[in-house]
Length: 95
Image: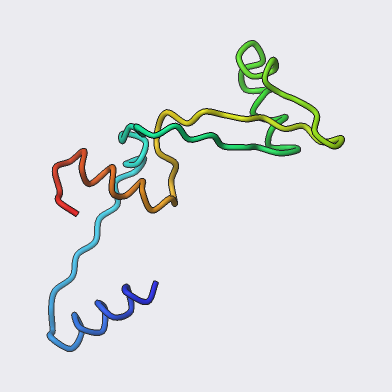
């Protein structure tokens, strides 16, 4: 976060023109090559199981009285720093 403020200050001082874009769902296009397991707990786990009961119900377990679902992520997850790197590599930007 500090880097954002530093570069913004430099851009302002040097009267640079700055443009930002948003690519909806961009990170969903980047494939994750690492083995990453995500844990969903409680209500979120139950809701996920309801989206596709045939697929997820068999993986829904009780842990200390709460429902838990473990998921193997095949795509990167938004808000993880590595997600941005993998997306940049997919579109050919060197980072």
